[in-house]
Image: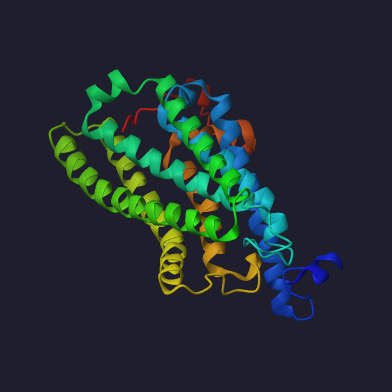
Length: 304
């Protein structure tokens, strides 16, 4: 798309001249709506439940939901319309759409590292990782990534591309080390610790919490690694990485955005207090209320 085309007005992601194009158009609208709805629901549920707000891991979840909510909002533009979000495109979002994806990426990595330390060294974690320090970590990576936005929009395109490549390269290494290395070690540590405890409901809850962490990590790698691998290959070859017509037809970036739906759904499914709060207080599902569950009285027993 050139400047003259953009000045004539943006079209849809693909011309709505065939059934397949209409399906893709509707899929992107539904995806953007689902990202906004689910993440807003989880965000509100955590704010409404004091026992959830008292745990550090839910602070990371708040951060993830906020960045994913913004990802959904920007996808109404970047994914539904004929937009190429690269450096020299007249329809770009000045990397704002991509930076919200990056914030979600960093938040999940930070949360995984936080859980690893909490399980492997619980006493040290409880003494050192206070609420204020957790919030400082979250604020730190938000400020860091928005500084990257400022840099990318203030320097020549060649420099911005190099900065993005370095950030993506470091992010890819971190994702592999944290999501694979730390979680494998986490499984062994948790298996050893849980094996020393007598059978109980609390032990079962802890085991389920560990499995949830691993499942989130696996889904994260499935959704993100194709995008990183494509970026590495293109940058090392020195060729253009953007091989698709626009954001809405790029399966690699669509897959990364699907993670913004999968992750909160996994947390709803795997965390009973969060699920109860979402179902009863946020979505107000009558059949769930009839079970007599009171989320305000429930405690989060899976401290892992």
